Length: 432
Image (cartoon, rainbow, N blue to C red; front, side, top):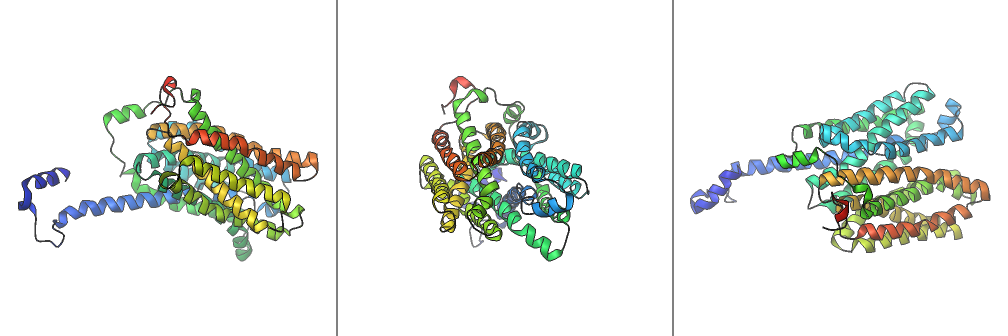
């Protein structure tokens, strides 16, 4: 079709017909088909991203029901929330290999299949099945975490900022939905907590069905690109820029998951009711949706990425310090600051993975490194914060330490924000 169009342009007015827009309707059909495929691709990405948190986040609000029904200890239930983070980190290096072997489209379909299978396994009335299904779900989400940024880099090279904003915003939307809806759904339906957890797998099934057309509408690549994609990037772990991206990813994840795990307990210890404390966590997640969307858009179009990094860190600092000074009286203000700051930080971490990579192959490999290191580091956050609380007997020391962690987060974020690319050769690191 392109050949015909170029030929028509060369022959001049003879090709112009009497249609109102001066083009033959046949010329519009390919454009309509491309627009339809593009819209379906965006819808698929949104649905995939929407499934990268709910099946795991839903465990936290259902924890009392899980403990009462299964007799599991609080420590065992908390392991259900830390296991997925370890899966994210430990399985991240495998994801690019899976993407190279199967193709990113097929690998992402496998990711959704794993989420569906994991949720079904958790229906079995057994603690082993509960933990085993959680690991399977974590494996599927790890693949999606790593490959989706590379897919966006490949298919939306000129709209990376907005698309990463949509991606990050959808992550927060999925998490907020699971946190806010799981208990009301259980109460309204009277269903067992296992059924409620499995219900989130229906969303993954829908995402997989919507994604199916992408298997036959793959982006065509040259033979050279196919050869390049057949082997991993060399020397990435020796590059300072890659480590800056990975460290920022890890530190902001640690701050987010540590604060999320203990925020209700902090507010309850300050005198807030358990119901209100849980709502504050949901409210903060809702604000995170806005922060995660606008941060990459501003970083690409309106402000320098370094300035957005400073702003997101300052918002987090304000929220944490506020929790130290007056946790209950101005709780809504602190949740606004934390939500916007944490949403912006995770969105920037994902954006830096894409911006610091020259192509989709590097993006997938850098995503694997950053998330592999980052989520293993993040898994230590909730445990460390709880241990500090046990030692001190209050939340002053944990909040102080968490606030202090923002300093290295800002330092590494400023390094990751610089306009450079990781490279194949470690000796060329930092050069475009």
